[in-house]
Amino acid sequence: MQTRKLGMGNLEVSAIGLGCMGMSWSYGPPKDKKEMIALLHAALERGVTFFDTAEVYGPLLNEELVGEALAPFRGKSSSRRNSGGCPTRATVASGTL
Image: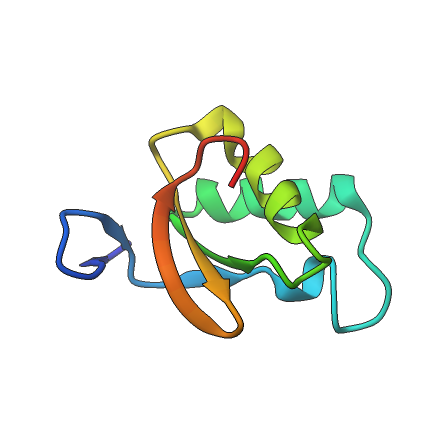
């Protein structure tokens, strides 16, 4: 998987990311938690390290889901947190975003 540097720092993420909004918000009711965690793990296994989430997706449910799924991979994945549709920061997954 190709990578890209994110912003002005040294954070490097996969060139392909996974948008997580539909996992807990917007496209119908929230999806099955175990299935979404399995999906996030499958993405990681395929080299995806960039996951897009936001506090409004739920609210907070999406970040909690992504954080729980990525906790075992701490330091090996990155999350982009959006606020009001605008990127505000990138953080290394810590289990609680």
